[in-house]
Length: 155
Image 1 (cartoon, rainbow, N blue to C red):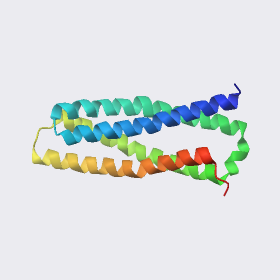
Image 2: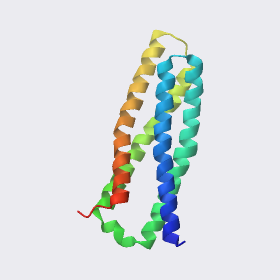
Image 3: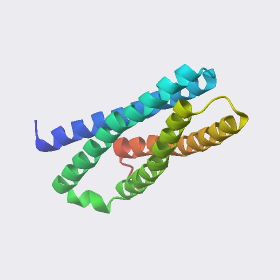
Image 4: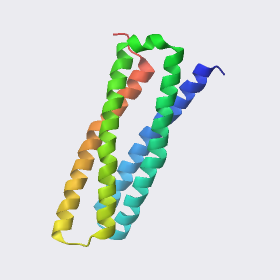
């Protein structure tokens, strides 16, 4: 296997992990919070923070490393509009991911340190709305990134 194919394989696998973990975290976070069961919410909020750092963070580092390696092998790609757009979208998704992680920490904190007071519930709803909004923006951008990486459109 050539170095390029090895890097490309790592890139595809890590992109799959980022996308799959994002979908899984979103699913379990929403299901947990919609359940209203404090025990479930506590468990889910702790697990999603851990999963985001372990899987999403690890795969993002691998994505960056494999992308850098492929660009060293194919420096002409830097001039391609599809790669420039994919890079801008990737930066945007990363900038959306940082506050998402912060919100997940806040959700976890609330789940472990609050009771059922109306003030706590209103705060939790605000955090969840912001979390969902950021995810709703980031997820389609991730799909576009995958499309650009696969199709490499010739504009």
